[in-house]
Image (tube, rainbow, N blue to C red; front, top):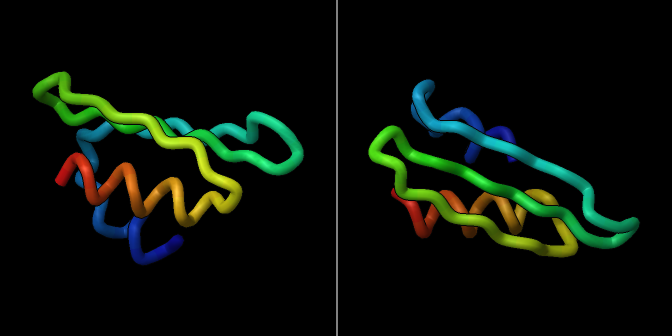
Length: 55
């Protein structure tokens, strides 16, 4: 998780929330307005997938 977070540009918006006891939601938005959200059982998996889609 630290690896993904350390690569995020400072001007990207990021929101991480626990939706249920077993599901995490991660939302990111680039400065150009492009955004993406993923829900996964593991927080790190959701972070990595959103980062992969938006980079």
